[in-house]
Image (cartoon, rainbow, N blue to C red; front, side, top):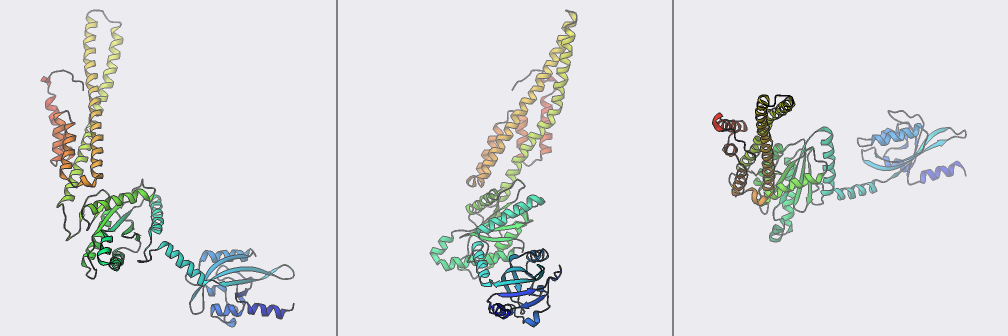
Length: 474
């Protein structure tokens, strides 16, 4: 078969064919020697315009540099390569091609050229991108869907674990969206959803990740953000929603917010905490956001069914924690001297017992037994400390457990009588009047140091010299 036949085959081929030399440099690549008519149509360049130009003439801003590196490595190694690449036409139009790179040999087995067989797959690539977008994005709002958001959340957890960073997660729910759809039609509900998506985008930063994770639920991932900064962003959003006038009905929104903790290794516990805050906000009637610890934060202009609820919950929680801290702190302070006394007493007892064995059986023995009695009293008193410490730590454990149960129960959290009942229950467990006085002082607003000072002062009065030396075992 003669060369004319081969030439006709190349020129009639529907795929673009390009021939380059072997002078491959890292900067520009080999020079183009020949292109067939299909390549001219695909690129918009004529044979004359492309001849002598580097293949990088067809590259653009989104051409993958790693793919180009692989092509260069294949040419330097004189090896074939099949890959996919984004190129650009003369008028700047991007197009995708499947490239089959082949080395061309002369009669002596030397590579003299590279043939680039390129098939236009732009339509197929766009369809794949569209399908991928449908897989990862919500069709109504264009936001990420739950699947894609979970992927972003996992990546952010890993980033924070590596760099000791933090992020905030917020879940937003449209209260009774189904009721709105029934009353006003689905078009009204869809309008609310789209408006919410636009308003959220307006209030968030470029690095924040927003997704529609369910029919009436949105999720927001805010990198490098703590609860305080997240609250400011959400408050701006709630204020913006109040100012909108073109909605068919003003939606009631509930928002739960949580912050990444270093012990978080999976998304599920973080999402669960945000849902706890969301449930609390919904329980309080919506129109607010709640952190995962469920303290209520009220947006301006909203009606609060429990006025002052946030401040009371904060005060109750801090005071109960202060009681626990005071109990532990006092036990630690008291332990040092008691342990020393116990150790010294036993040491002296052993020495006296050894001496007693060699002492006079009358006067010396009597004196030693008297000293032994005194040391025994000191030992028992030291053991009393350990018994009191065990009781205090048991009180702390029980109190913290009951506090956790109360905070975790949305029905009990906002009830002042539940907090008062918890305080009364803990106070009843104290056996010493001085401990009850310390408890009362903290609940009245005293600091831990102030309450401990009162406690120690009361103990010193009850431990006066004329109080006797009776020993009370708990």
